Image (tube, rainbow, N blue to C red; front, side, top):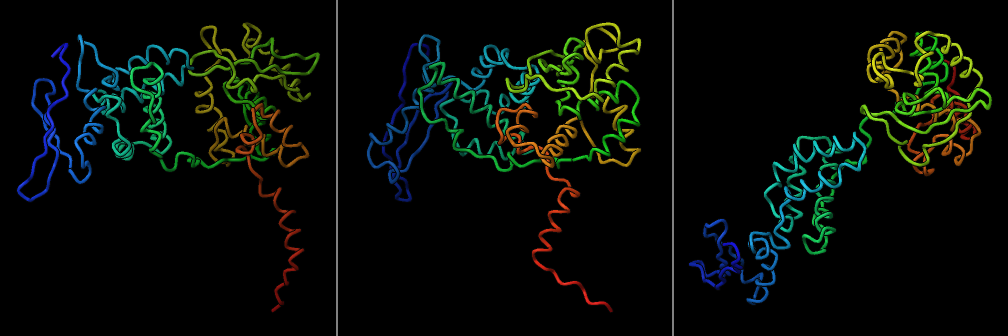
Length: 373
């Protein structure tokens, strides 16, 4: 059929039931196929022809090349992987590639971009054996592929059908935020050996992300000015820039932290190389996931602390700032975030901080004391 443009045949047919339909017959991969449309929905022939415009484009091949509109999601995914993914962080590349290979290509690979419909996308999303956030990620990537198709001028610029599909629960926090008191963190630091105690001390004192703590180099520590420069991140075995431009900053270093770093500097293994926390082999930072699993969490469990992760200390840092006299703008800068709105999603108010405020409310209400028996 190369070089032959087909529109198919269209005729009005009256069924035995008396219902009138439009019967559209066409060939696809050499096979004759047929679709019907109720005349009640498309009273005039030109109405149904207009409805079929995109479907006709999808059918046709000219000189062996797909006409605009016939490009499949699989073709778009391959081009997306080749041209777009290399510019993303390794962790994002791995995540997107997994979504494409496991969920998008198996279902949508052979389907033309212009044949994607909102109801079909909605049904697909609901059947995915994933969490709400992962379903949202898959839906978002499918939308990006169709957006790219329009940008690359492979399909007409129209409303993206995936835009009409919503995934419930995407913004709902799955994990409960765990907050530690300063006393609990001090107890944990005291119970840990170096360098694990220093990892927690630095993360808690400055509210760093663990990829920023692990990427610290000795040149980032300025004992004269008592500051620490945050300028890079180590994640998924790759050194990269900080998460956002706002994350790159110079942070004040408290004396207690400086003293702990100087004490750690006397250890033989810390004197060689550029990294504050070097790997046992090679010239890379230490893998902090193993440190948390094998060293920090067992000690925290023995101390009776809740289940923690590295982000626990960043959330706790924000909580401590909020219970003090730091203004919201100052908290944003100390968290190294681009907006106060983002800062407000971190941390929370601890029970003991709430207690005096609740007591004041109770006093205003003049709650009666129970009568003595």
